[in-house]
Length: 265
Image (cartoon, rainbow, N blue to C red; front, side, top):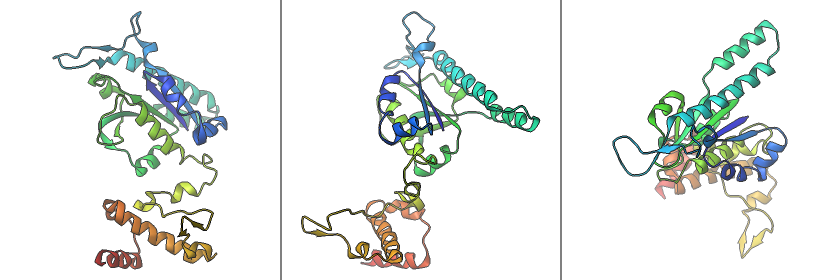
């Protein structure tokens, strides 16, 4: 999967994406991440990309043209790569043209967007290329947003200095869903928010720590019982910490009865 980040601070973004799981996935060629400096497309000698907003107001606004030119450069790069990777057979050429004409997913990181979720991460992970636009100052000229943005996404109801940290959060969450990125491909499927339930509690050695014992069922070797215990613990933890998620959870009749019993206690 290929990530393209339009930003004023490429070093900030790339320094946080060169290590750990993401860094190893990049080294293996499973992920491609580039940070495009919007300042490189400014049309003045000082490479400034901001100006005062019409109508007045506090702060500065990112101008439309540098953002648009940076996007166009990324779009052309992607289309060139797709053409080069396509075979010359008629059906493959037709497929290439169809992919090239498909509008790129461009995500603008904004507190005004839909809240980022695991379901959204799963949807975006299906894309071959994903463009992440990071705003700064008081935002970006509305006209270029209308021109290129397909998705408005927020990582929470609070305000940050820019879109770089949200972009890194999204890349981390989406990358984990790309085949081969995690050593254990099953782990991405069973972590928190799968089936709208939080992950069950985990334990490692020693069996007793500070007087606290590992639940005996986990030492039993009985996989069916362990699976049932983990499922119940996921339901219990979700009820205690994120009861709002239970509205979306798909539960069996037995699990619904278990949840009802918990509510009555």
